[in-house]
Length: 415
Image (cartoon, rainbow, N blue to C red; front, side):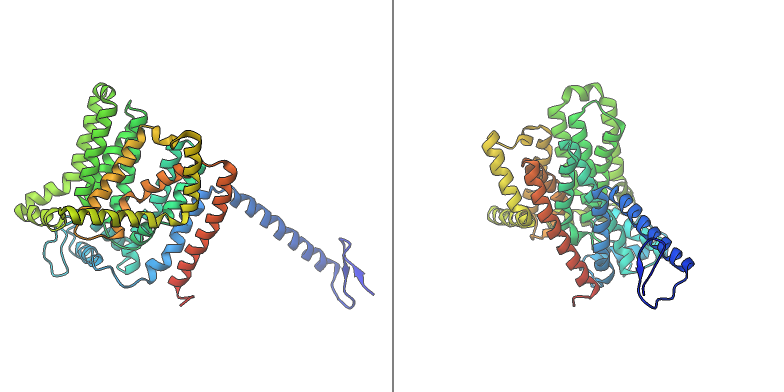
């Protein structure tokens, strides 16, 4: 015969269970179910952008840890950082042989040296600040798109687009100055966009615009100088009258750019004089730029194709959105906003600069990838909510699968 427990369930024949044990088992099961429901309800309250940022770090961390082979340029920053930690001289970058290396500004060296000082010397610790900064770029892209379009969903689309860009993924796994340049340019662009929308200067917007530009200059030099000049020019053209009223605050912001961007250069010029000018100019201008018209035109096509390839997973969505917007309005609505003069103008200008360097490299496009993601998100937001939901589901699952597969390959599970 079968027996019955306290909650009315029949027990199999021959099962010898005391009433107290049955109550304890039922209580345990109820506790597990309640706890699971509570955990799920709490996890469901976490914003999707948090999951995306955490996932970006989580899925790239195996690559950062396992990818022992350095990019040829990484050694310049890791060797100099080790020398800084050993000698205590955090101002002057040096090679493994102890020679001066003044080709690039100081920020990337400081990032690696700080990580070494805190966590020890290893390939993982040399790259840790960069993968975290990559996650910061994903979050800032989300915030910028949300601010521009006043729509959180559009911000999330932009964050998803940028998180799957090959240039950002690769740069986040290497100890190179491309990522700090990208991060601080994005901070600066966000600040200038806020000033273009609200020209009555706020302290936060001014600090983001001019402080971010200064830190970008201290990260990689000339490209950030071009951006700062372009952004200030746009700001003056669009809002000259409010700037005249707030001239002291804007002048203070410009001084902040000069101090942050030029501080290290001034120190190195004082200590090493002509050697800084010769080495930095050779790296950033004479050995880097190529001005033959035919070569520049060909390389411009190459960099444009590289940019398009990064958007191929989103092409169906983009094409449908652009066609729908053109049929309804004859143009994309958001392009009529004057703030887009800064973003689209800088992307176009940077593509021209990238075509002028001595070689085409897709990681050189990293500084404009977040802004391209924002532009793409603006286009895709032109679709109806139902169509956006369908495309989001398709691409979301595809993107998660692709990133998870890359992570598995990095851990050695697939190979």
